Image 1 (spheres, rainbow, N blue to C red):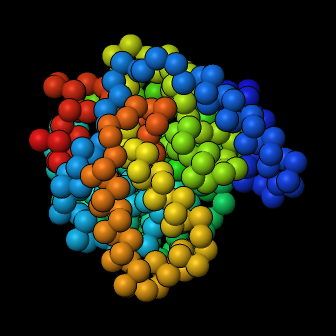
Image 2 (image 1 turned 180 degrees about the vertical axis):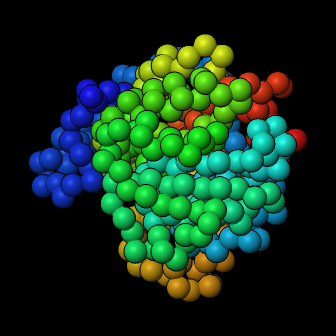
Length: 307
C-alpha cells in the first residue's frame, strides 16, 4: 500500500540529527510554512477567548506541562461527553498513536458517561498494563494498515500530537474518513502542531500543519462530512513556551516545585488573556474536528465553554 503524506517526507525530526540536518530541517519547514499558509479555511475558530473559558478545569490541573499541552488537556476535559453519548450512543474511542495511553485515562476521568477506549501504537509501553481494564485497551499494529485497527467499530477517532509522527498521515486520515462515511454519526478530533510549532519544539516529527496541508485533509473527506479547525492559543502562549519549556532548569522547577507551578500558572492565564485571536498560521496548537450526521453541527456544541 503506497504511503500518502500531506507533505514531502524530508527529514524525520524524531531522529538524532547532526547540526547540518537540524539546520536543513528548520530552513525547509520555515520556507514551506510561509509558502503554504494561504487564505483562511472555511472554519477557523479561535479558542479560548479568555482564561474564564477554561474554568473550572484550571483548578484541577497541575501546571507541570508545556503551555500548549495544558491547553490541549483542558480542551479534552471540556468536551461535552454526555452530549456526544446522547447523540451517538455508546462512545467507542479509537486513539491512533496513543503512546503511554494516558489520554484514555484523562478522557475516562473527564467523561460523565461510560466510554470504551482502544489505543494503538507501533510499540508497546510499560504503562499499558496499569491503564488497561475491560473498557480500556491498548494494542500494537504494523504502522501501515490503519483500517485493520477499526475492528471494534469505533465512532469517535482521536489523536493527540500523533499525526506529525506518522509518515502516511494522509493515508490514515483517508482510511478513517472512509470508515466514518459508513456510519450515521461519527466524529474525529485530532490535535496537531501548527506552523508555530517549529519555534516551540524545533525538529519534531515529519511536519507542522499549515493551511495547504489541512486542505488536503478536507479534500479527502467523502460527501456529508465537514471539517472545522480550532486554533488553540495565540502568540503569547508561544512566547510562554519559549520562556519556560526551552530552559531546562525551569522545566525541572515546574515539575517539582509548587511555588514555580503557581508562578507558571499565573503567567499561563495571563498569556491566554493577552493573546489576540489568530488563525491557523499564528496559532499555538490546532484541533481538527471532522464530523458527520449532526444537526446542528457538533463543532458549535462540542465544548461546554462555548455555550
